[in-house]
Amino acid sequence: MNSAKVYDLQEDGLSLADQAYTKIKQRIFDFDLMPGTRLAESELAQQSGISRTPLRQALQRLQHEGFVEAVPKVGWRVPDLSFQLFDELYDFRIIIETFAVQMLCATAAERPALDALAKVWHVGPTERPAESAEVATLDEAFHLQIVESTGNSEMLRTYLKITERMRIVRRLDFIKADRIETTFEEHSSILTALQRRRSDEAQRLLRAHVEHSKLEVRKITLDMLYQARKRSLDLRAQ
Image 1 (cartoon, rainbow, N blue to C red):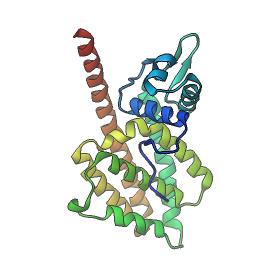
Image 2: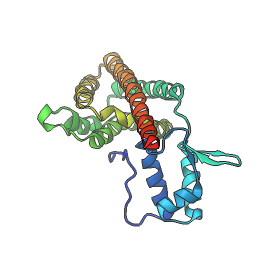
Image 3: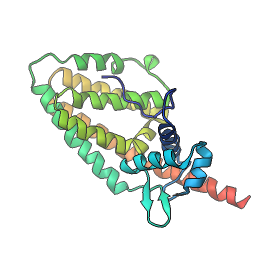
Image 4: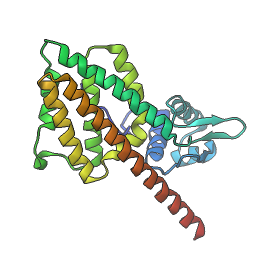
């Protein structure tokens, strides 16, 4: 499977609605549009350089994915971040991924997907990418491939939805060099256990890896929100 995109980059041929969707979503990811921010269609349309119709289509798509919400008689707003929701999604991830690990370790069939992942993650420090967005993409693909390799299409469909909803905070796990290094080491250990069909060990390593990531992401998110609010206050004071 091709690596999933962490960012929806604008490409030639995208419709106006798709372009607006991409730009607004990226601004939300970058905390340029902070949680709790009200969104005026007229202002967004001007900033995006498009009319209200494709803009509204973009906002409706973002609403469906949980990145914006409609407020009666007000318009739109970026929802407040709910760490309880993210904790629940992380827990759901663990349930799905550990079950996938059990299935992969139990099968006697060949598992070529693991060999492909090994080429990415069983590498030394000098061979590892250092760019945050690239590592985030590889990380997402790693976990997705484990679930996809089970062949359970309904489980994969549910997992994809969870992945999309978590992306706004999950990608922050790779803005520090030490977290990139740790991710490579932990993924490599998980893969080794999978390749040796050590189900209990692989599940234990994977669960610890996801829990560690959850804690780091929470700390980074809180810090980024603090810095974004501080910048906003500084601008108002000028």
